[in-house]
Amino acid sequence: MPDSFTVHPLVKKVLEDRATMGRGDANIDWGMGEHMAFASLVASGYPVRLSGEDVGRGTFTHRHAVLHDQNRERWDVGSYVPLQNVAENQAPFVCIDSILSEEAVLGFEYGYASNDPNTLVIWEAQFGDFANGARSSSTSSSLPAK
Image (cartoon, rainbow, N blue to C red; front, top):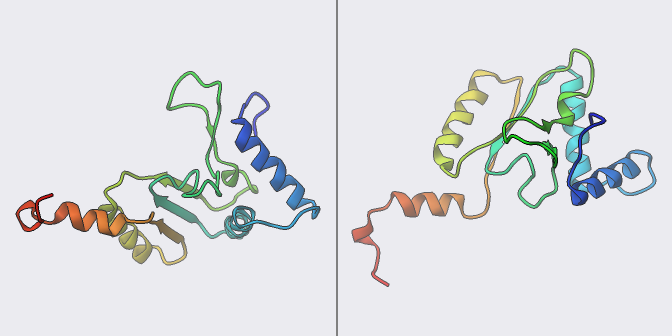
């Protein structure tokens, strides 16, 4: 991280735990294992693209792929993505927090993956995304009154 960067105290603990795992002093958890896999891919020249609601943080806060400076003054400045800084000449790592219109995002990512088969494209859904989309696209007259 940049020296002047201040992460949230809970995220700082996650990063400290990952450093401990990296030294071999603790077992690797899901978030660290995922970062290791993504890092090895981008360092080997394979792009990684994540999208979905809250993928930067991770659905259950396991990921923290996008870090936010707690002292930033603007919403559009002050984020840091460690996986974009793995190695010189690495492949891109892209992490996109999408809106909760998941059918559109899923369709776009399917097209992206079909067009670029050497990129790991992951669309991450949260519980209920399909049910919510199906419910919102159904007609209100077919739903029972409550």
